Amino acid sequence: MHSLNNFYRTIGLEKPESPEVLKSMSTFWNVHFLSNRHRDFIYKFVNNKLSINTRLSHFVENQSRLCTLCSKSNLNEIEDESMEHLFYNFFTTITKNFRLDFYKKYLPEENVTTWNMIEEKKMWFLGLTRNSERNNLFMATCFWVLKFLIWECKLKKGYLNTNFWFTEFENMLKGYLKVSKDLKIEMLKLNYNFCRTLTGGLIERNGG
Ligand SMILES: [Zn+2]
Image 1: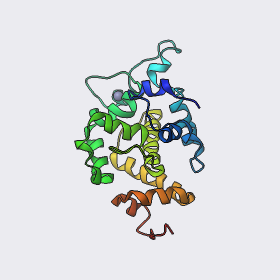
Image 2: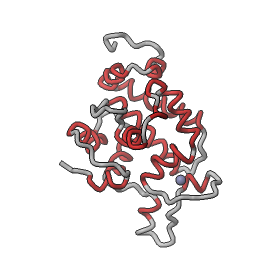
Image 3: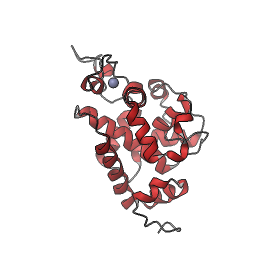
């Protein structure tokens, strides 16, 4: 199986030991309910084919290495656009409020602010919660949606608007929940409060 070794290096994480997690990462783009655009993004993400600026600068003359979103945010220091920076550091460190608002709104049950950096990165990149080596389809989907929205924002050179983001995040998940019963079943295993609001409180115990 494709091991994605280089991929884990680009996000600054050790290759996971769990065969289940490894398989999910290397095959997630194939999940049936994803939109084509989302699927294409995930495939490129894990196969090191996304056109991030540090990568582009090797092929394109005069291509800046600097981060598109930092440049748009009027920051004093603009960092290189690496995978780790764009999909993790920018949102967790540079735009601190986004991170805190996201955790407060969607994952208050997890107390993510008490986690260490590796634990938090595992959630952003692998969709795993603290101490969990077990893969959950819904959790993995949430963080693939989040990373997709970051990418769309970069492509549109957009500004960050938390309300817009959260609406998009929920709309994508709702759309996927409509077409996938598997996703709904996995969501019900998590018991997060926001999962109940996503389906408008219409969840039956049997997964209805
Ligand atoms: Zn940046």
